[in-house]
Image (cartoon, one colour):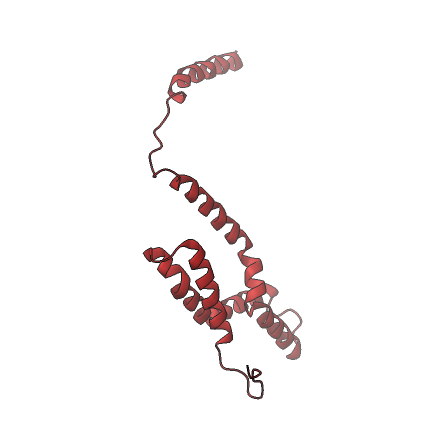
Length: 150
């Protein structure tokens, strides 16, 4: 009996809500074509954020710091005293400070002019990449290692 009563109440709710579901809300939130551009930007943002850990492993000094901390742990004779999670967290924290000038250079070269509306998205990608490369390779070299003369 309770099941039949719940079924009837459910059907009444669905039949009452059906006319309200047929109403169409206006979609004039953006000029023509801008809504699809925002959807593509959101899709790319989610993609980049999902790939961020892999990018951090490939283009920063994070793996080197993890290796050094692991070797240091073994060198002082500790088997598992600082856990791997602590080593990884410390390496992530220090990686930010090492790579911060590179991130700042890429931001000021590419992202900030894009947000100000001075350049296009293609130019922003190119200039941010150039800024990051200049930040990475613009550091002082180790003594004894010099570039070939051009």
